[in-house]
Image (cartoon, rainbow, N blue to C red; front, side, top):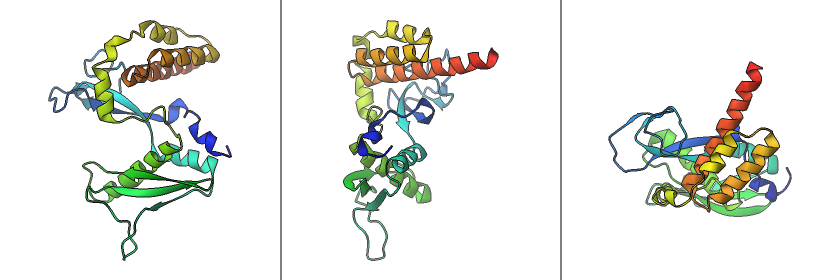
Length: 217
């Protein structure tokens, strides 16, 4: 990798993580998210303990840093503002604006730690800001979405039926066939992010199954 276009290349499945987001706010009905349970709204089972949720696909800090280093070993980031003591300045909401520079191009990003506090909050803010700024370059753009947008999409998820596409992915043979079926399934989602998450989960499940079949052979 040697240019900004490489930032837009899809991340491999093993570098994609999933964050559960409740379908209903303040839902107290919680349980183990495992196959056959009612706590997954999209067919992805993370094994966590939470209320009925969709699983948001995202790329973590380490995977993003690896991609940035591949594209530009000299990439840098800096806070948009510094205090007289040489520390990053946070805004009134507790977040931080940064400049991310890759291959000589600089773009802004914003990070926030949510409810985290202390040192973990600072690390979360930096990681969140880097992911946000890298998204401006196209990194993991197909995975980037906000929780509220995703929840809005839940209400519309029944307008498109991708059952046949999911079954085709499940029964796919070669990696080339899987790649084609995956691409077709994403197109069939018509931009619906809940359905896209189901397709991503189906592809990952098929790859995991193929690996297990190879071990058992």
